Length: 152
Image (tube, rainbow, N blue to C red; front, side, top):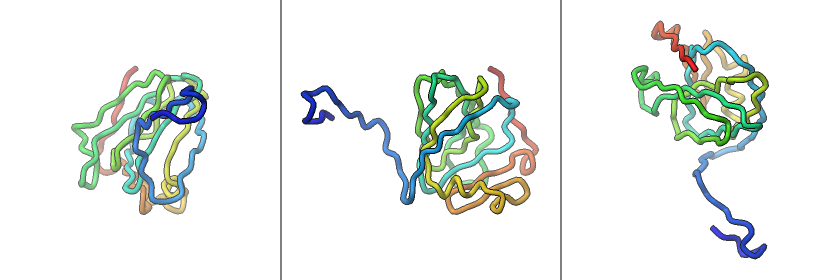
């Protein structure tokens, strides 16, 4: 989409449709390396979520497709290695775990509803799971005796 100002030097590309019906925030998150184990997966009902890496640091995201079930379809869980040169936006309801840093001090901008972040505060955590109107975070180990592991 060309912008009429600046003699064509600025061109806008609408590459994703970000969906949110409430206050959106863009926190900078610094991620340290942690064991390559997935105990929790979460989804969001009211917004898409975007992760934008800074500094070109690689990271891994574990995801499963959206569904109407109580938990992610464990047969469809996949790990994806991102090289840090581009971000991504998930569809509504995509099951995921927060990105795993390949290197310490990996900086990622996360675009999401403030309500989802607030859903992770201690008051909303019951038996190692978090629930809010826009957050459904499940403990796979507790519910299905599953702990996913991945290798780089």
